[in-house]
Image 1 (cartoon, rainbow, N blue to C red):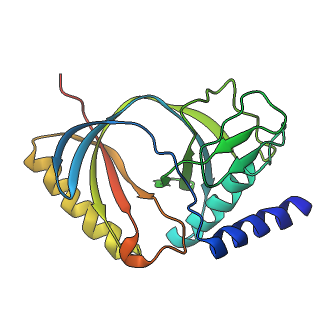
Image 2: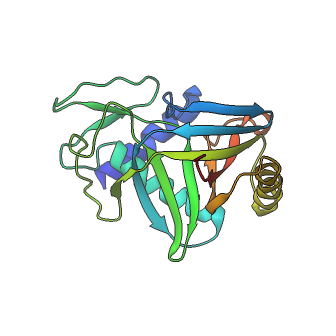
Length: 208
């Protein structure tokens, strides 16, 4: 109960002060840029993820709460998060984990997979074990992703439209799409709609 109250208080204070929910983004190498499209190569990354059911908007909220609980101290070392800067203090009882953007959402047979990419300074071995068994720590392999960037609030129609545009771009570039697209959100929910950064990401086969 105390942890839930603390989590709610931190989120409220962040909203009132306008603090961004993330400062670090995963590094990548840009292969091609034709705005609003881009081809990127990402290295191996570590993510915390959960699988939740329900509608897209409900799932992202539920998944965010579960993952934020882990980041805000819901782990065996009771580590907390620095929400305004990537302050990292390795192997300290009061160590802070910097939260990164984006929050990623992908369809799954059991529901939706919601992910936070962990800061680059962490490995599976150095991250604390989550208290909630719903939260999984996973290693993501290197990937080449086709991306389309857009602003505004996101609903299913936006996702469908942007995904169609991205698939057309992938076909135009004579690339082969792999798997299902993901929705990436880079901004906290209090960000004005026209300032929001959203992306649809679609894995493509790497060049031989």
